Length: 106
Image 1 (tube, helix red, strand yellow):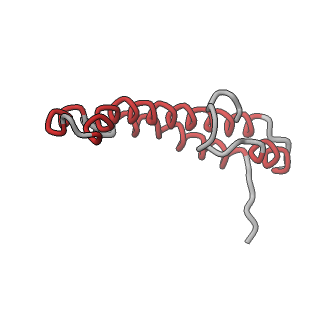
Image 2 (cartoon, rainbow, N blue to C red):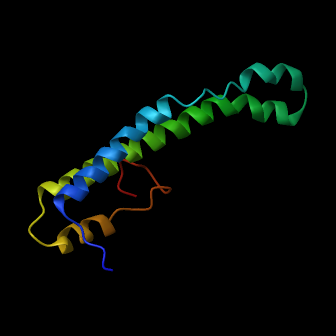
């Protein structure tokens, strides 16, 4: 069965992706900092101390990427021209969500 893209499907997918940043915001805080004292003097304690800020950074990057991809799907839906080839080309040009700056197109 072939996979077909249409404006309604693109908008539905965009809506689903647009909800993910709120899910990320509601995820529990890592709270690693409160355990660093117990590991004072150990190299793992020093690394654990970095965990909270790195976790927050990762969450912010994910939220940005989901927002950008959602906006791209809306753009594809709004500029859909009766064929899914244009939308497919635009989506194929998107970089892997796990690489580069989410705002830099990498």
